[in-house]
Amino acid sequence: MRLFFIKYFVLLCLFCSFLSCKNEENEPAEASKENIQKTEKSYHEKYLEEIAEIKERDSVSTSGMLKIEGGEYMMGGNSQQARRDEFPQHKEKIETIWVDETEVTNAEFGAFVEETGYVTTAERSFEINGKTFPPGAMVFDAENPQAWWKFKEGANWKHPQGPESSIEDKENHPVVQVSWYDAMAYAKWAGKRLPTEAEFEYLARGGKENQIYHWGNDFEKATAFVNFHQGDFPVSNEIKDSFEKTAPVKSFPPNSFGLYEISGNAWEWVLDTYYPNAYSKLEQRIDGYFKEYFNPQQQKVIRGGSFLCSESYCTGYRNAARMSSTPESGLEHLGFRCVKDAE
Image (cartoon, rainbow, N blue to C red):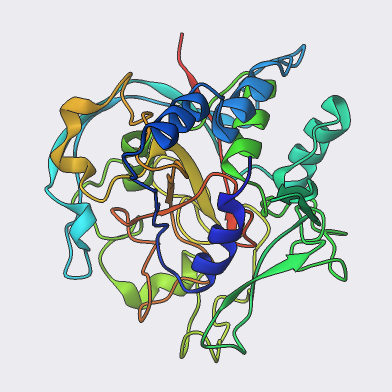
């Protein structure tokens, strides 16, 4: 059921995308076997069914959220650092929504786990070809240039860098090592949802659609506004922004919409399935976002950048920057925030 996990662990370490290999034999027996397999629910479908069973909390409120008026803006790359998947630029119309002021914190996620008993993806063991593998997640290793990311047994949201680490005294840090499924589960319980990719960029821009960064176009001011990596990535970090890894939420000034750490600190999951050519196929969106299958791993878009982003590497803190990861991914620099439709 979770055969793609091993592919994910190996290929993510090499910063490559998944490749799906299928046997296209035309023998009748093989075709019959494939037809039987297609009737079985996928891991993705089963996980979404589990999430659908989560009971919404008794008191759903907009506490800790801001009501952001909708509007139109130009979405897409607007700088020399923009990558191919940020084009073409196009107009998007966003409805008025409520948005979490900050990324979901360890304390907030802990309340969800305590009330529901939910077990995150990284805390679940998995089986491949009859062999059981222990729970764990991906941890960054700057010492190994051949594979910066490595699977670490015992790494999860309570132990972001592995069993020896903890979130003690970090209740107000963004929760990380949570998968897209974990974020979806929390949102269901909270009576909210994840933002669409178009919504996220609108929120990040804060009404300043021509700016490269949420604070303007001057990168020299970055350390005052965003938690990111300064220095020779990844071997040296000058830590001019005062944080080597995650920072407590509200450590940096909010953008013009009043949203904190909308760039840097931790990447954030959004609803959409990732397409490198998404902006060329907007007519194929359903309910305002891409939710159909792109590949067996259902790669999802992540936005906002993290403490590992740098000018020499991913520049993920740019308003238009977009990347992706598989939905079961647990990473020490990846979290989320929620939105709620305005009534």
